[in-house]
Amino acid sequence: MIRQIHRLAALAFAGLVLALPARATPYSTDYTDLWWVGLAEDGWGVNVVQQGDVLFLTFFVYGSDNAARWLVAPAMGATAAQPANGTRFSGDLYQTTGPWFGGPFNPAQVTANVVGSATVTFDSPASGTLSYTVNNTPVVKAIVRQSFRANSVAGFYYGGMLAIASQCGNSQNNGAVDVVGSMTVTQTGVQTGAQASFQVDFFTSRGATTCLFAGTVVPQGRLASITGGNWSCSSGGTVDNRGSFTMTGIDPQRNGFHAAITATDQYCNYSGRFGGTREAGT
Image (cartoon, rainbow, N blue to C red):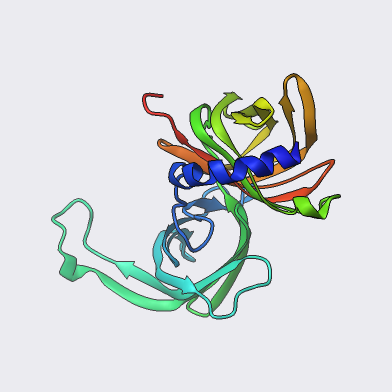
């Protein structure tokens, strides 16, 4: 079956390049979300908005008088020295004041003073470490995306898996592997424990082929992940490939979805992308 998938690559690749949606940013995982520590610090949080390689952070914090403070880090750029595993951004932190919300807004009354700096290091698409200083007071927090309403990826798409095969039992099978075609995605529920299946139907020289990826969805803010999923491919009722997979950074949007995938079967290891463009009218 691996050979059949490789033969399909030349025909499928051109269509998939047009079909798969672009990532929200070409620089990294899109870290745009509401982040927090968890219920242990319910009421504290930070909004992260990413455009390109710059983050804009707004903080939910309080002063020594327990009154809210308006802190922003509007231009956090990627640091020159990046961690071996992850992505790091840093920039100045400002405290702002402005006119009373019940009266007319006068931009001339807005002040923004540098009170420190902020650095955030993401070690995965859904977790990181935020350190910042406000008037010489240091703060360090382990942050995760806040989940309050998970997305569903269910729908009809054109797409599938674009990956690189490695460590194959037959070294001739190392290289690009494309499993693309009409894809039907089902998902039962949107909370932790929801089950999702991704059925990709396409044709090889052996005829109609189906690859099925299935697993448990774990919401992570606006994204999600699947760990320990199972996948198999069959032609003519015969199962050819069987193994496990992990998807991270599953990002469902109106026009499609995309994720990173690592997988293994009895032949090879695979690492690449998984996603599709939603079919019109669905």
